[in-house]
Amino acid sequence: MAYVQGYVAAVPNANRKAFEESSEAMVTMMKEYGALQAVDCWGVDVPDGKLTSFPLAVDKKEDETVTFSWAVWPDKATCDAAMEKMMSDPRMKADAMPFDGKRMIFGSFQPLGEI
Image (cartoon, helix red, strand yellow):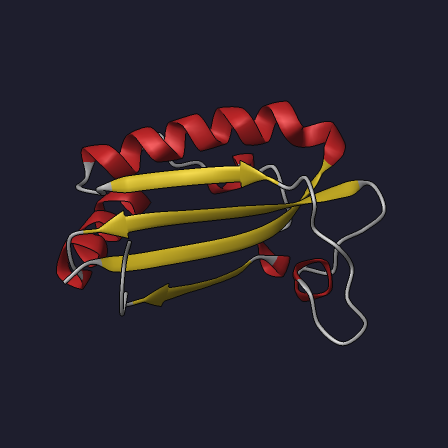
């Protein structure tokens, strides 16, 4: 059964181009290592909430935009193997992350239905 990873981050607006370049590299790597789909999105209509919201979850600052990303893997085993390979891949540069990774939220999910 498919396995889905999701990520939400706040990216400084000044780093949009760097985020797009990082996205291209990550999507390429994920697909090389077995992802069925990998998508990064730049926020367009991501409202602030009073109790909870994407901006609150990532402690979005005034000059930042919320991004939403996901990757679909054939199964958890493929994802786990890919993550291990990606961490040792020289194209993966943690210091080149165009946002504060400490404020990123992420998780993995098993789909219940699909259209």
